[in-house]
View 1 (spheres, rainbow, N blue to C red):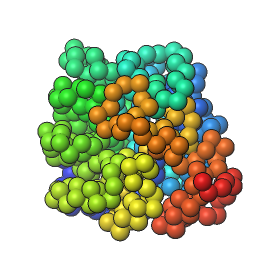
View 2 (tube, rainbow, N blue to C red; view 1 turned 180 degrees about the vertical axis):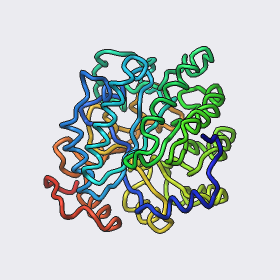
View 3 (cartoon, one colour; view 1 turned 30 degrees about the vertical axis):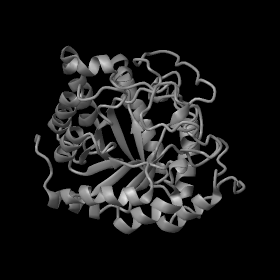
View 4 (cartoon, rainbow, N blue to C red; view 1 turned 60 degrees about the vertical axis):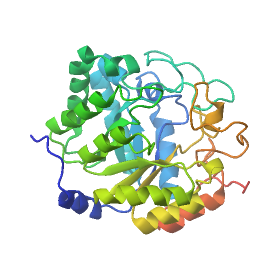
Length: 352
Protein backbone atom coordinates (compact mmCIF):
# COMPACT_ATOMS: atom_id res chain seq x y z
CA UNK A 1 0.00 0.00 0.00
CA UNK A 2 1.27 3.47 -0.87
CA UNK A 3 0.00 7.01 -0.61
CA UNK A 4 2.85 8.38 -2.68
CA UNK A 5 2.42 10.25 -5.91
CA UNK A 6 3.87 8.57 -8.97
CA UNK A 7 7.24 9.85 -10.11
CA UNK A 8 7.33 11.80 -13.35
CA UNK A 9 9.15 8.90 -14.97
CA UNK A 10 6.44 6.42 -13.98
CA UNK A 11 3.70 8.79 -15.15
CA UNK A 12 5.33 9.25 -18.54
CA UNK A 13 6.03 5.52 -18.92
CA UNK A 14 2.35 4.82 -18.30
CA UNK A 15 1.18 7.55 -20.67
CA UNK A 16 3.54 6.54 -23.47
CA UNK A 17 2.02 3.06 -23.45
CA UNK A 18 -1.45 4.43 -24.18
CA UNK A 19 -2.90 5.14 -27.58
CA UNK A 20 -3.73 8.82 -27.95
CA UNK A 21 -6.67 9.20 -25.58
CA UNK A 22 -9.72 10.72 -27.25
CA UNK A 23 -13.16 10.42 -25.73
CA UNK A 24 -16.07 12.10 -24.03
CA UNK A 25 -17.68 12.75 -20.68
CA UNK A 26 -20.31 10.07 -20.96
CA UNK A 27 -23.83 9.99 -19.56
CA UNK A 28 -26.47 7.98 -21.42
CA UNK A 29 -28.96 10.19 -23.21
CA UNK A 30 -31.73 8.63 -21.09
CA UNK A 31 -30.22 9.89 -17.81
CA UNK A 32 -30.62 13.39 -16.42
CA UNK A 33 -27.66 13.04 -14.02
CA UNK A 34 -25.27 10.38 -12.65
CA UNK A 35 -27.78 9.30 -10.00
CA UNK A 36 -30.23 8.29 -12.71
CA UNK A 37 -27.45 6.57 -14.63
CA UNK A 38 -26.43 4.37 -11.69
CA UNK A 39 -29.67 3.61 -9.81
CA UNK A 40 -30.76 -0.01 -10.32
CA UNK A 41 -34.21 0.96 -11.57
CA UNK A 42 -32.90 3.33 -14.25
CA UNK A 43 -29.55 1.78 -15.24
CA UNK A 44 -29.83 1.40 -19.02
CA UNK A 45 -27.28 -1.03 -20.50
CA UNK A 46 -29.09 -1.18 -23.84
CA UNK A 47 -28.69 2.56 -24.41
CA UNK A 48 -25.13 2.50 -23.08
CA UNK A 49 -24.19 -0.29 -25.49
CA UNK A 50 -25.73 1.51 -28.46
CA UNK A 51 -24.14 4.86 -27.65
CA UNK A 52 -20.68 3.50 -26.85
CA UNK A 53 -20.78 1.68 -30.17
CA UNK A 54 -21.34 5.09 -31.74
CA UNK A 55 -18.44 6.50 -29.70
CA UNK A 56 -16.19 3.83 -31.16
CA UNK A 57 -17.56 4.64 -34.61
CA UNK A 58 -16.56 8.28 -34.13
CA UNK A 59 -13.03 7.20 -33.19
CA UNK A 60 -13.21 7.55 -29.41
CA UNK A 61 -11.37 5.11 -27.16
CA UNK A 62 -12.11 6.37 -23.64
CA UNK A 63 -14.89 7.81 -21.47
CA UNK A 64 -14.99 9.91 -18.32
CA UNK A 65 -17.91 8.81 -16.15
CA UNK A 66 -19.25 10.43 -12.98
CA UNK A 67 -20.28 8.35 -9.99
CA UNK A 68 -22.71 9.38 -7.25
CA UNK A 69 -21.78 8.69 -3.63
CA UNK A 70 -25.41 8.41 -2.54
CA UNK A 71 -25.99 5.42 -4.84
CA UNK A 72 -23.04 3.62 -3.24
CA UNK A 73 -24.24 4.46 0.27
CA UNK A 74 -27.64 2.94 -0.51
CA UNK A 75 -26.47 -0.10 -2.49
CA UNK A 76 -22.67 -0.55 -2.64
CA UNK A 77 -22.66 -4.04 -4.11
CA UNK A 78 -25.32 -3.15 -6.65
CA UNK A 79 -23.42 -0.07 -7.79
CA UNK A 80 -20.24 -2.10 -8.24
CA UNK A 81 -22.12 -4.71 -10.27
CA UNK A 82 -23.48 -1.98 -12.52
CA UNK A 83 -20.01 -0.44 -12.82
CA UNK A 84 -18.71 -3.84 -13.86
CA UNK A 85 -21.49 -4.09 -16.44
CA UNK A 86 -20.61 -0.65 -17.76
CA UNK A 87 -16.94 -1.60 -17.99
CA UNK A 88 -17.81 -4.78 -19.88
CA UNK A 89 -19.86 -2.82 -22.40
CA UNK A 90 -17.22 -0.13 -22.84
CA UNK A 91 -14.43 -2.67 -23.18
CA UNK A 92 -16.37 -4.56 -25.84
CA UNK A 93 -16.17 -1.40 -27.93
CA UNK A 94 -12.47 -0.79 -27.23
CA UNK A 95 -13.21 1.99 -24.75
CA UNK A 96 -11.47 2.54 -21.41
CA UNK A 97 -13.02 4.39 -18.47
CA UNK A 98 -12.08 7.17 -16.06
CA UNK A 99 -14.36 7.23 -13.03
CA UNK A 100 -15.00 10.47 -11.09
CA UNK A 101 -15.76 10.19 -7.35
CA UNK A 102 -16.66 13.71 -6.20
CA UNK A 103 -18.06 16.76 -7.96
CA UNK A 104 -19.05 20.24 -6.75
CA UNK A 105 -21.02 21.19 -9.87
CA UNK A 106 -24.70 21.63 -8.99
CA UNK A 107 -26.69 23.10 -11.86
CA UNK A 108 -29.97 21.96 -10.28
CA UNK A 109 -29.42 23.76 -7.00
CA UNK A 110 -30.45 20.54 -5.21
CA UNK A 111 -28.52 18.19 -2.98
CA UNK A 112 -28.40 14.66 -4.45
CA UNK A 113 -31.30 12.35 -3.63
CA UNK A 114 -32.34 8.77 -4.33
CA UNK A 115 -35.41 7.60 -6.20
CA UNK A 116 -36.85 8.90 -9.47
CA UNK A 117 -35.05 12.04 -10.58
CA UNK A 118 -36.84 15.19 -11.67
CA UNK A 119 -37.51 15.63 -15.36
CA UNK A 120 -35.35 18.16 -17.22
CA UNK A 121 -36.64 21.70 -17.31
CA UNK A 122 -37.51 22.85 -20.84
CA UNK A 123 -34.83 24.83 -22.67
CA UNK A 124 -32.45 24.64 -19.71
CA UNK A 125 -28.80 23.57 -19.63
CA UNK A 126 -28.14 20.51 -17.41
CA UNK A 127 -31.10 21.35 -15.19
CA UNK A 128 -31.04 18.33 -12.86
CA UNK A 129 -27.31 17.82 -12.31
CA UNK A 130 -26.50 17.33 -8.62
CA UNK A 131 -23.12 17.29 -6.86
CA UNK A 132 -21.44 14.26 -5.28
CA UNK A 133 -21.50 13.64 -2.36
CA UNK A 134 -23.47 16.89 -2.08
CA UNK A 135 -22.29 20.22 -0.76
CA UNK A 136 -23.49 19.55 2.78
CA UNK A 137 -21.66 16.23 3.09
CA UNK A 138 -18.54 17.56 1.40
CA UNK A 139 -17.92 20.08 4.19
CA UNK A 140 -19.18 17.93 7.08
CA UNK A 141 -16.19 15.99 8.38
CA UNK A 142 -18.54 13.71 10.33
CA UNK A 143 -19.43 12.10 6.98
CA UNK A 144 -15.86 11.65 5.81
CA UNK A 145 -15.37 8.14 7.19
CA UNK A 146 -18.23 7.05 4.92
CA UNK A 147 -16.79 8.99 1.99
CA UNK A 148 -13.44 7.31 2.58
CA UNK A 149 -15.12 3.89 2.64
CA UNK A 150 -16.86 4.71 -0.66
CA UNK A 151 -13.60 5.57 -2.39
CA UNK A 152 -11.58 2.71 -0.90
CA UNK A 153 -14.29 0.14 -1.61
CA UNK A 154 -14.59 1.03 -5.27
CA UNK A 155 -10.87 1.41 -5.91
CA UNK A 156 -10.02 -1.83 -4.10
CA UNK A 157 -12.63 -3.64 -6.21
CA UNK A 158 -11.20 -2.40 -9.52
CA UNK A 159 -7.60 -1.63 -8.48
CA UNK A 160 -6.02 -3.97 -11.05
CA UNK A 161 -8.79 -3.84 -13.65
CA UNK A 162 -7.35 -2.93 -17.03
CA UNK A 163 -10.72 -1.64 -18.16
CA UNK A 164 -10.29 1.26 -15.72
CA UNK A 165 -7.84 3.76 -17.18
CA UNK A 166 -7.43 6.26 -14.35
CA UNK A 167 -9.21 7.58 -11.24
CA UNK A 168 -10.43 11.20 -11.08
CA UNK A 169 -10.87 12.09 -7.42
CA UNK A 170 -12.77 15.37 -7.73
CA UNK A 171 -14.42 17.36 -10.51
CA UNK A 172 -14.16 21.15 -10.28
CA UNK A 173 -13.77 21.58 -6.52
CA UNK A 174 -15.06 25.01 -5.58
CA UNK A 175 -17.65 25.26 -8.34
CA UNK A 176 -21.26 26.28 -7.63
CA UNK A 177 -20.14 28.88 -5.10
CA UNK A 178 -18.28 26.39 -2.89
CA UNK A 179 -15.09 28.43 -3.09
CA UNK A 180 -12.33 26.93 -0.93
CA UNK A 181 -14.69 24.97 1.33
CA UNK A 182 -14.05 21.62 -0.32
CA UNK A 183 -10.27 21.86 -0.62
CA UNK A 184 -9.77 19.69 2.49
CA UNK A 185 -11.87 16.94 0.89
CA UNK A 186 -9.87 17.28 -2.32
CA UNK A 187 -6.64 16.66 -0.37
CA UNK A 188 -8.04 13.70 1.53
CA UNK A 189 -9.52 12.05 -1.54
CA UNK A 190 -6.09 11.54 -3.09
CA UNK A 191 -4.98 9.62 0.00
CA UNK A 192 -8.12 7.49 0.06
CA UNK A 193 -7.59 6.36 -3.52
CA UNK A 194 -3.93 5.58 -2.96
CA UNK A 195 -4.59 3.68 0.27
CA UNK A 196 -6.35 1.11 -1.91
CA UNK A 197 -3.09 0.77 -3.90
CA UNK A 198 -4.44 0.96 -7.46
CA UNK A 199 -2.33 0.04 -10.45
CA UNK A 200 -4.00 2.94 -12.30
CA UNK A 201 -2.87 6.58 -11.94
CA UNK A 202 -4.80 9.30 -10.12
CA UNK A 203 -5.87 12.73 -11.34
CA UNK A 204 -8.32 15.51 -10.40
CA UNK A 205 -10.60 17.73 -12.46
CA UNK A 206 -8.92 20.99 -11.49
CA UNK A 207 -7.39 23.75 -13.64
CA UNK A 208 -10.88 24.68 -14.81
CA UNK A 209 -10.50 28.30 -13.70
CA UNK A 210 -6.98 29.77 -13.95
CA UNK A 211 -7.82 32.22 -11.15
CA UNK A 212 -8.43 29.46 -8.58
CA UNK A 213 -4.76 29.14 -7.75
CA UNK A 214 -5.05 27.05 -4.59
CA UNK A 215 -7.42 24.46 -6.08
CA UNK A 216 -5.25 24.14 -9.15
CA UNK A 217 -2.06 23.81 -7.16
CA UNK A 218 -3.41 21.17 -4.78
CA UNK A 219 -5.00 19.14 -7.55
CA UNK A 220 -2.01 19.28 -9.86
CA UNK A 221 0.70 18.73 -7.26
CA UNK A 222 -1.03 15.63 -5.89
CA UNK A 223 -1.95 14.15 -9.28
CA UNK A 224 0.03 11.54 -11.19
CA UNK A 225 -1.42 12.83 -14.46
CA UNK A 226 -2.41 16.52 -14.62
CA UNK A 227 -5.93 17.35 -15.82
CA UNK A 228 -7.42 20.61 -17.00
CA UNK A 229 -10.70 21.87 -18.45
CA UNK A 230 -10.83 24.35 -21.28
CA UNK A 231 -13.80 25.93 -23.02
CA UNK A 232 -11.93 28.90 -24.44
CA UNK A 233 -10.66 29.89 -27.85
CA UNK A 234 -7.41 28.31 -29.02
CA UNK A 235 -5.14 31.27 -28.32
CA UNK A 236 -6.11 31.20 -24.64
CA UNK A 237 -5.78 27.41 -24.54
CA UNK A 238 -2.20 27.75 -25.74
CA UNK A 239 -1.44 30.35 -23.07
CA UNK A 240 -2.77 28.10 -20.32
CA UNK A 241 -0.75 25.15 -21.52
CA UNK A 242 2.47 27.09 -21.18
CA UNK A 243 1.84 27.07 -17.44
CA UNK A 244 0.53 23.52 -17.19
CA UNK A 245 3.47 22.10 -19.12
CA UNK A 246 5.75 23.32 -16.33
CA UNK A 247 4.57 20.35 -14.25
CA UNK A 248 6.43 18.14 -16.76
CA UNK A 249 3.74 15.48 -16.53
CA UNK A 250 1.30 14.04 -19.05
CA UNK A 251 -1.74 16.27 -19.58
CA UNK A 252 -5.39 15.37 -20.06
CA UNK A 253 -8.03 17.89 -21.07
CA UNK A 254 -10.96 16.21 -19.36
CA UNK A 255 -13.54 18.77 -20.52
CA UNK A 256 -13.69 20.79 -23.73
CA UNK A 257 -15.97 21.72 -26.67
CA UNK A 258 -18.00 24.92 -26.45
CA UNK A 259 -18.79 25.92 -30.01
CA UNK A 260 -20.23 29.36 -29.25
CA UNK A 261 -16.98 30.19 -27.41
CA UNK A 262 -14.86 29.33 -30.46
CA UNK A 263 -13.89 26.04 -28.85
CA UNK A 264 -14.48 23.65 -31.75
CA UNK A 265 -13.47 20.21 -32.91
CA UNK A 266 -11.78 21.83 -35.89
CA UNK A 267 -9.73 24.22 -33.72
CA UNK A 268 -8.79 22.11 -30.71
CA UNK A 269 -8.65 18.46 -31.75
CA UNK A 270 -5.69 19.01 -34.14
CA UNK A 271 -3.88 20.98 -31.43
CA UNK A 272 -4.39 18.28 -28.79
CA UNK A 273 -3.11 15.74 -31.31
CA UNK A 274 -0.04 17.86 -32.01
CA UNK A 275 0.69 18.22 -28.29
CA UNK A 276 -0.20 14.58 -27.49
CA UNK A 277 -2.79 15.69 -24.94
CA UNK A 278 -5.63 13.30 -24.21
CA UNK A 279 -9.02 14.99 -24.52
CA UNK A 280 -12.63 14.37 -23.50
CA UNK A 281 -15.48 16.42 -24.96
CA UNK A 282 -18.25 17.47 -22.62
CA UNK A 283 -21.20 15.40 -23.74
CA UNK A 284 -21.60 12.93 -26.54
CA UNK A 285 -25.20 11.96 -27.38
CA UNK A 286 -27.60 14.83 -26.81
CA UNK A 287 -30.27 13.86 -24.32
CA UNK A 288 -31.91 14.72 -21.02
CA UNK A 289 -29.05 16.95 -19.83
CA UNK A 290 -29.71 19.30 -22.77
CA UNK A 291 -26.10 20.46 -22.81
CA UNK A 292 -26.46 21.51 -26.43
CA UNK A 293 -27.81 24.69 -24.79
CA UNK A 294 -25.32 27.25 -23.42
CA UNK A 295 -24.59 28.04 -19.77
CA UNK A 296 -26.72 31.18 -20.03
CA UNK A 297 -29.83 28.95 -20.05
CA UNK A 298 -28.95 27.24 -16.75
CA UNK A 299 -31.27 27.81 -13.79
CA UNK A 300 -28.36 28.55 -11.43
CA UNK A 301 -26.10 31.56 -11.89
CA UNK A 302 -22.86 30.89 -13.77
CA UNK A 303 -20.17 33.54 -13.82
CA UNK A 304 -18.98 32.43 -17.25
CA UNK A 305 -22.42 32.78 -18.85
CA UNK A 306 -22.87 35.34 -21.62
CA UNK A 307 -26.07 37.35 -21.85
CA UNK A 308 -28.09 36.76 -25.03
CA UNK A 309 -25.80 33.90 -26.03
CA UNK A 310 -26.50 31.99 -29.25
CA UNK A 311 -28.89 29.14 -28.43
CA UNK A 312 -29.24 27.82 -31.98
CA UNK A 313 -25.68 26.55 -32.35
CA UNK A 314 -25.01 23.53 -30.17
CA UNK A 315 -22.79 24.35 -27.18
CA UNK A 316 -21.71 20.79 -26.22
CA UNK A 317 -22.53 17.27 -27.52
CA UNK A 318 -21.59 15.51 -30.76
CA UNK A 319 -24.50 13.29 -31.84
CA UNK A 320 -28.27 13.55 -31.93
CA UNK A 321 -30.23 11.00 -29.90
CA UNK A 322 -30.71 8.85 -33.01
CA UNK A 323 -26.95 8.73 -33.57
CA UNK A 324 -26.77 11.16 -36.46
CA UNK A 325 -23.91 13.67 -36.13
CA UNK A 326 -24.73 17.26 -35.27
CA UNK A 327 -21.94 18.21 -37.66
CA UNK A 328 -20.75 15.35 -39.88
CA UNK A 329 -17.53 17.21 -40.61
CA UNK A 330 -16.65 16.93 -36.90
CA UNK A 331 -16.97 13.15 -37.03
CA UNK A 332 -14.72 13.14 -40.09
CA UNK A 333 -12.11 15.08 -38.11
CA UNK A 334 -12.30 12.69 -35.15
CA UNK A 335 -11.78 9.77 -37.51
CA UNK A 336 -8.99 11.52 -39.38
CA UNK A 337 -6.99 12.46 -36.29
CA UNK A 338 -7.53 9.19 -34.41
CA UNK A 339 -7.13 7.00 -37.48
CA UNK A 340 -10.01 4.84 -36.27
CA UNK A 341 -13.78 4.56 -36.35
CA UNK A 342 -14.48 4.38 -40.07
CA UNK A 343 -15.16 0.63 -40.07
CA UNK A 344 -18.30 1.24 -37.98
CA UNK A 345 -21.13 3.20 -39.56
CA UNK A 346 -23.24 5.92 -37.96
CA UNK A 347 -26.74 6.98 -38.99
CA UNK A 348 -26.40 9.65 -41.65
CA UNK A 349 -27.02 13.33 -40.96
CA UNK A 350 -26.73 16.63 -42.80
CA UNK A 351 -24.28 19.45 -42.21
CA UNK A 352 -26.00 22.32 -40.42
